[in-house]
Image (cartoon, rainbow, N blue to C red; front, side, top):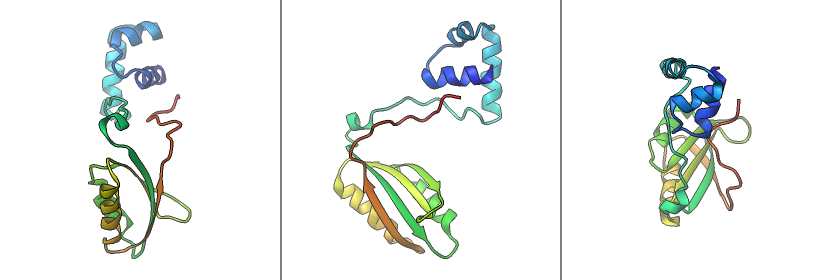
Length: 143
């Protein structure tokens, strides 16, 4: 039942408990209790709208790989994560130590952000890839 609730909320985060309950053929109170429990244990971390950032002027999306030396990766990632332009910071395997996903309104802001990364102690190198087209961008997977 929890997976059904999660899938319903991923499809429509504004769905009422009544609508979800009808779809799952359970009582509305059951859905209410399960959602509260899922929030308490941290499975559901919040309810966010799916925003088209290009309509807000964020026309540039960048995926930035960084290489960090000196064992300070987590400190660097925490600092990067404070930027309002950053939507994701991932520890990864492969050529880079971390991948950053960020959105910008203009090239100047992107340029300043990349330069701020390179000015950080222990950031050895960055590689910025500009997103040309967003073919799919969702924040959930059907489970």
